Image (tube, rainbow, N blue to C red):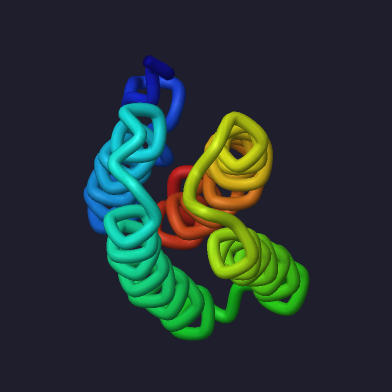
Length: 141
């Protein structure tokens, strides 16, 4: 089984975003576990629906936060979110065209969901949290 866990390397320093990331990673772990155990197409689609719904909620919350603080890289961040949403759609397409999750599908999930999300959190999301922290503590500079 693939080890997908929220750990200290993924902490951005923003409590709201970190809590949502932890939930999102837990959902991804459940999704991958269902795929790896061969639970079938219907369960994989339901788990993907669950992941897709939470991802949209999370991205919307992140983007609203960025608008609120006038984050200068918002457009670039939104492009990255759109990239992820496209990957989710490709997973739906794969499931619709095949009997269910197979090794190729699981590999796609690991690259386009797990690896992408971890990298995104460590770079893009962390920079947002740092920007917010610096703006909230400008007097300390």
